[in-house]
Length: 184
Image (cartoon, rainbow, N blue to C red):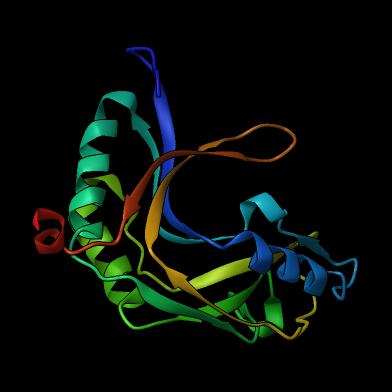
């Protein structure tokens, strides 16, 4: 990725849902009331670590940290099940499906710890955002979500904001492969 010397990048690490699962989530979103703005299919992902806007010269260091962390985890099964809301069901602003899997919490926590000064001071809460309220709040709405897939990589994603909403570009894909296995 080419950047100018004075450029800045808005970055986050994520697990991107496979196409088939994103398609099924889009079908489930059809059940939502008009109070909700569904997440676009190309943006259905699970954020592991949000860094916000960083100077472009930090990019290689951020990739190296991600490569080191990814290299210390085995692939794992990720499960999405049910729905919930942030900040809570009574005053819902974000509708999401909780995510779980052996190694998922540790992966997110390890990324946050290793990225240190680059990340927002926020605890990792594994979830995939399904929709956002169109107004200040929306009535909580449960929809059926039950998906599982094998996670074998994490992605560093660049987010570009515009009046049409964010657009995403994958900067790096990093395999979950213990470093010892990479050396064999």
